[in-house]
Length: 276
Image 1: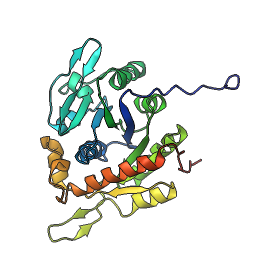
Image 2: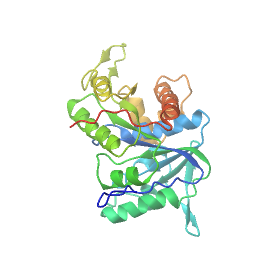
Image 3: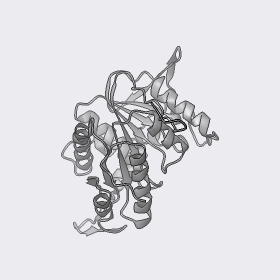
C-alpha cells in the first residue's frame, strides 16, 4: 500500500532468461565509459559467462565501431535478433541508425526504444547484460534505472576534479533510485612512459578518495594507453588479447571484481552515503 498522494515506484519486471543487468555510467562524457563497458563485457565472456552488451547511449552509440561490427539486426515477428561478436550478444541504436546522421528524439520516444531493446530483443539465456548508459543523469538514464531490475552499477571517472564532481552526482543518482553501487572505475588514471616512469596526467588519487568518501569500492585504476584507444578505433578491443597481456589484464581483473561484487550485492541494499 502507498500513502495517498505518494508516488508509486515503477514496476521493475525481470528480463526473461537474463540473470543480471549491470549498468556502466558516468557523470560526464569523455571519460572512456564505453571503452570500459565494451572491454568489461568481453572480459566477462572470457571468464565463461554468457554476456550481452546493450548500447543505451542513443545519441552517441559507439559500440558498433568499438566492436568492429556494422550490420542491421533481423526481426522475426516483433522480436529483434541481436548481433554477436567476440562472444558477446549485441544491441545498439548504431545498428539501426548508422553513420553520422543525428538522432532527434525526445524523452518518450527514447523511453520506448530502450524498453524495446530490453524486452523485445531475443537476448537468450544470459548471465549478464552490460548496459552502456549515456553520460550524465538525463531522461534515458533515469528511465532505465527506474524500470530495469539492475543488479548494480559502476561509475567511470577520470582523476580530474571536474570529472570527479560529476561522478559523485551519478553515484548519488544511483543511490537515490536504490541501485546497488558496484564501485568506481578510474579510467586514464596514469600514463606509463617507455622507460617505465608513471605520470599522473589528470591528477592523482581522485578516484580512490571519491570512492572512500562515498563509501563504495574502487574497482580499478586503468592506465591511459594508446593501445586501448587504438583497439577501440579499430574494432579490436584490448580485452580480446591474450590473458597475460598488460592491456587486457586490468579489464579481466575488473570483470572478476564485478562478478564478485554482484554476488555480494545480491539481495543487499546500497551502502553509499547520499550527499545533501
